[in-house]
Length: 58
Image 1 (spheres, rainbow, N blue to C red):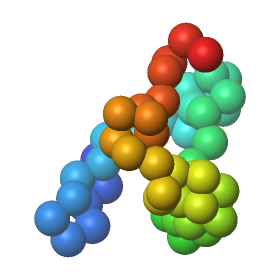
Image 2 (spheres, rainbow, N blue to C red):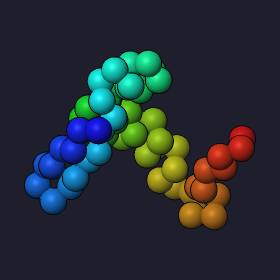
Image 3 (tube, rainbow, N blue to C red):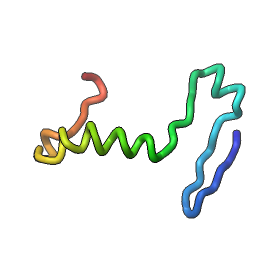
Image 4 (cartoon, helix red, strand yellow):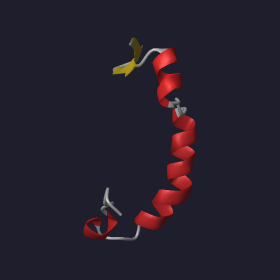
């Protein structure tokens, strides 16, 4: 494993070979933020918390 520290955050990353073999890919935070801001936020922002909960099982 690779241990990466950015400020107060610590991230444990599997070795490259293991990530590739398992299909694990890093998505930069700015990409995740863009996706969330433009898809989930508009959908969830006007809903009460009880309706906004997401089920793992569909």
